[in-house]
Image (tube, rainbow, N blue to C red; front, side, top):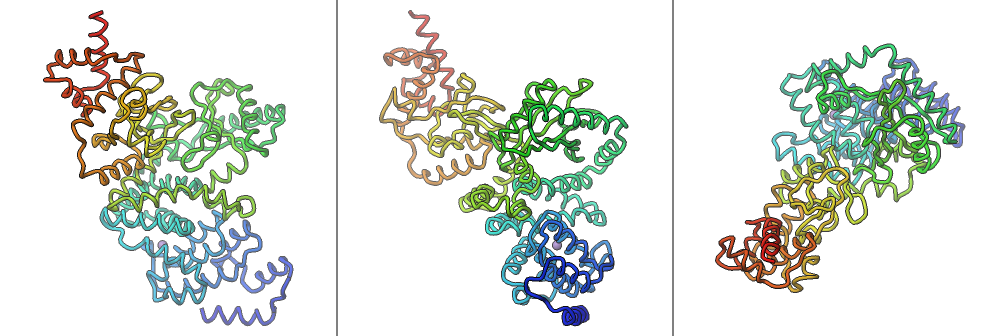
Length: 597
Ligand code: MN
């Protein structure tokens, strides 16, 4: 470090800084002050950073590298390489993502406070508070990575830190990516453990932050460590694709370009290869013997979102769409705010081709997610956009405060991060839910009030149990106690959620709210009178779904006798407790009434 500092100072004297000097002069200065040979390990980093942020100050990067190199000197990675290769690689990943200079400086120094004599205070004095804050955040994640509770606790810290400054999380993801790349030298057991943890928490987190460029590589490297044979099989398949593959894609791209030009849509069309993990996932999911790998292209339109639909029309006019494969993630963005149109068509030679259609802005957001704000500061600096992107993190932080123990929080997080999502229609709008979600999940998604008081659901026009699994595209109506009361029993006491719901709800939102309700309502049990009233309301509601009503209690009284209940009240309590299904009672009631008439 001393030698380097002297070197810089000597040349700095020869070439004093002029305020307002031209960028070219500055570039020449950097060429003069530092050797350009590959022997300087910081060159590639500076080049990557400047290729995105042309006017970035590289001297602070060199200073940070010098300090990190000096502090880590004598330390080695498990691979035998000098330790400094790790922080340098992490900074390089951040630079390729397009992160700002501050992030790169923090990445270079991210292990110094933890692993060397360099203190946080010294770091703050040398590089400023912002860098110190980022390094401190990254350091805190790394403590205590053992045991389930510890892991949950770590993730909790990660989310909190990310809510404050998402750059902390991006450095952490880059750190994990480099550690995963160099996992080969570790023991089989620790490779498996680290790869699993990456797959369970960090990849979904990466997905939720929308950083697809990082996620693709993490996906593939996890597959390599967890399923080495499968990884090799898919890699071989991609490497040995038949000669016609590229020509076919070129043909599809060329024909698409012509169709778009005819429709006056200005767009970039390109082949869009899948990454290994994505091919493998589809192969396994479809139960295919050979790797399942459809040709895919992307269309990035220059104009507004409406041009995406124009492009879709042009493609569907050219080739017949495959039914059921069109998805509109523009009208209904995914939870990670991903937007695009997806469709599949029967392309040339009647082969299925997948097509992604998006605007340039959607493309940037899909590739870089929250990092897009740093990579493209001019186009995405609107505060509202940023608030939107971080809305999910804020929601997680709300749960963090509500969840009692860290393990429960992690469970909720894992569930929420699950990749599979479905879209259903309720209240005339599309609602995104985790796969396997039930009407209760939907009710809580609509509002806490409706979740707490939901009684019944109609799915695609039919009454369905509250525990039934919803499917993609279902049209769902949720009925609450107030719906039942309005035509039936005005003074029914609110019933609230049922404990069994916890056994089938899928969304953390529903789990949290049900637990919250029971925490607030543990003391006062529901009285028998309430159960009778609500049991009656439930039957009234179920009857209405059959377009029937009750003129008097007489049929119910007869039914309770026939079913062997001591009195009508006991039957109504049984309905409330779900000892009998309301719909079953109603069917028998209708039979009874129709038979007697
Ligand atoms: Mn590290």
